[in-house]
Length: 276
Image (cartoon, rainbow, N blue to C red; front, side, top):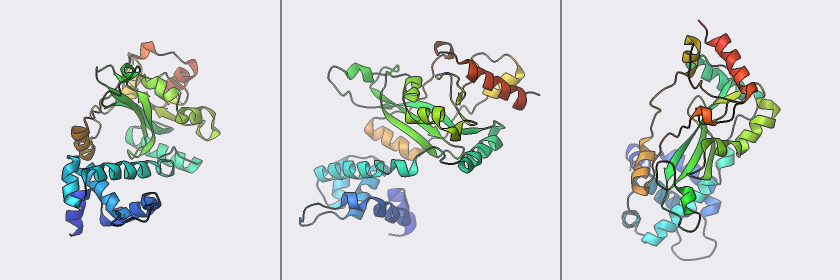
């Protein structure tokens, strides 16, 4: 199979698959000496094919000549192995130079200073977990979901993800209880930088939000945003098969506690960078 056809089927190049396998192969090797155990690279390919097409596991099993339960176990095993790499690849800027690089790129996009990330939450549909706490997972869209927080940088690279809160949780609750929030509050590295969030969050020195009702032209320029964020067709394919659904979540700014320091910083930025 040539490189083009390989990437069409697995969404990664052969080189990328080889590098990924090297990172997680120790977690995929069989712990017992059994016959015909799947090699780590075979397990990675099974999982990648499932991610790519999101079809029934039985179809994947037929393609790789294994059983459906094997595909199920492999997908879970590979997914957990990949997730264990999160601290190595998904993190906020780790030094002042990286903060400056990210903020310069944000500034080149819209003239907004000192930004190191854009923050939002999204609902990811799940099957009802059942039990007494099931209703905690029902989101305001009236389906069962997780409220997943992500922070992206100027290149749309994910810098933070929190995927442990039920759908009924507010975006602000997820953020206020996250490690990212604690770092922004307490780490001196970030004292001159901030995130951008929507009106579902409180305006803080480390998290600036839009004006609820912009009055001046400067305030209107400050809150201007892209109405159609880019979508990933590979994610959308998984959404269809696994019954996941991503939707932007916004709450009224007036329902969130106000922070004088956050408002003061926001006003300074509006005056210095968005006034005509």
